Image (tube, rainbow, N blue to C red; front, top):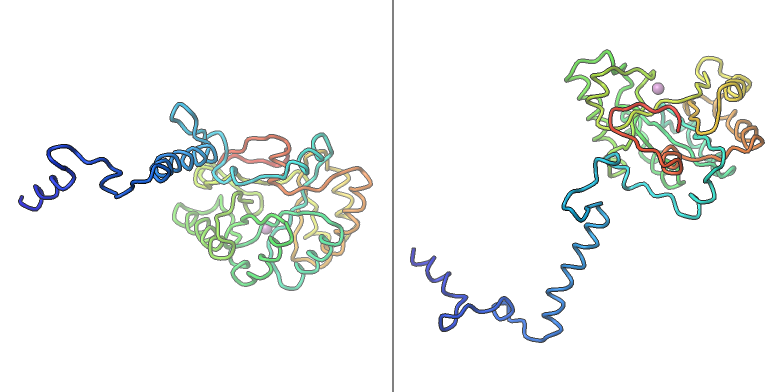
Length: 280
Ligand code: NI
């Protein structure tokens, strides 16, 4: 009790409470100004950045959890508004054999792509994932072990999705924004537990089945339309060799290449965890 009463009286001089500034030994006027104003400015900017609104509520539910980090530079966004857009996506990597060659081609042709990587593979070849990001591509989750998620029970489903999240945190420092379910397979349980939007595709190139350039070009021309997402796999040499031809053909049809996140932002689309999107 004695200690408490001493503590209580320390802030008082002759029965009058000492001001915060006096207690903190802050005397100069400009320093008082800085102590009061700077936190107000800081938290004001913080509130604006995090989407806090004036009525004390946040608008986080308006956008996907990680979506707020996505920002297409204004000049690029404006230049792509109203254009025909396509997102090239590559699943099942990374590999240290095929993926680097694909990255060479994409760099040469100045095309951004989206890689849906397996957690198990990204842990094996983190340097390939680092190059994907350094080259300006998007890297998202294709789960940890490429299991059919719709066939998994609660714990197994959680383990796969959570292991992939941990692999992302370890290799790239943050969780994936999007999940592409293996085989495009999902059910209500997957949707409820995904914790991120599910991104499928509008064009299946069937590159894994026919293993040649002609088939990839055929399916792309047959099914692609504006805002489409093309599914390919960067683990097949035949797919890598087809990519320059595909880029050339699509450029001839006035398509512009964007990542999935860019496509979403340029189209002003709202995406929500557990919902499934194949084009925008
Ligand atoms: Ni796959």
